[in-house]
Figure 1: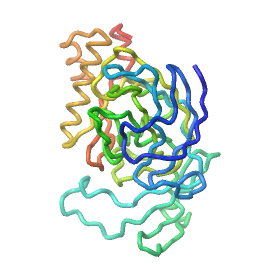
Figure 2: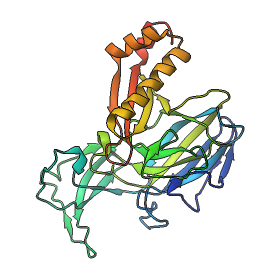
Figure 3: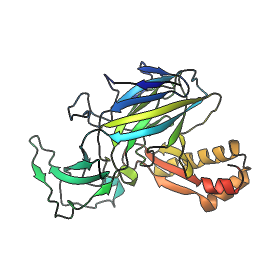
Figure 4: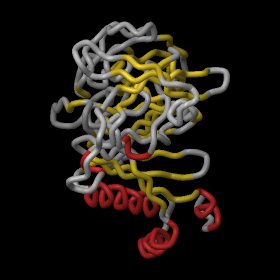
Length: 319
C-alpha cells in the first residue's frame, strides 16, 4: 500500500476509457485536487473548460470486467474561500406554470474554514457584464449561515462498451449523482466495466441540499484524499456505498420511478447475496425499514439512494 501525491495537468468532461494518469495497487491512497464545475482551480483561475471536469482517471491494477472496486473518501475539503450556486429552483421540481419574479443570479458564498460554514456574500447577474451586488449581513439571505458538508458531485468509473458519458449525467458507472451523503468517511463501490476500472473524480461541493434542485451545490475546487480497493470476482450492477450507520444502493435514471427500481433491486441483491437473507425476509425488511434519499433531481438522469440501517442488520445477526 502506497501513498501518492498527484497534481493534475488536464481534466475530462466525459467519463470514459481515457489514458490513465496514475496506476494504483490494491489499498493505495491518493491525495490530489479537483477544479470546480466551471473549471476554476484553487486560485479561482479557469484552467480547463467547464462542465464538471474530472481529475484522473486512475488505473486500479488487476481490475477487470466482472470485478468491483471501492473508493473510500479519507479527506474532502474546499481549497479556496468562495464558491457559487444558482439562485432559482429548477422548473421540473415545481408545479407546471409556477412563476418566479426574479432572475437566476449566481450566488457567491464565503467559506469560513474556522467555523466550517458557508454564508452568501454576493449576487452576480449572468449578463455579459455582470451586475455585482453585495449581500448585507443584516438581510435574511445574509443571515443564512450553513455548516459545510464537502462532497464530490460527480465521480465514477469508465462505462461499458467503449462509451464516454458526459459528466452532466449518470448511469451504472456512477457519474453526476450529486448525492450529498457521499462525504468524508464513506466508501463507495463501483462495478468494473473496463480493464483498470479507470476512476474519475471532480465537481466538488462545499454544501448542497437534497436533489441539487437549483442545478448546483456550492461549486468549489477541492483537496481530496481517497483509498482504492479491488474486489476480485465481486460483481455488482449499480453503485453501492456504506457509512457508519447504513448500507446504500444507487439508481440513476429518468423518470424517477426507474431510478427507485434500480436502487431497490440492487439492495435486494446485496441483502440476499452478501448478507445471506432469504428473498422474502429481504422484501419484508425493506417494506417496513427501508429509507430513501434523493440525489440528483436536476440533470438528465435522476439519482435515488436506497438505505438500510446497519443496526437492523446487526439485530438480524447478519452483520
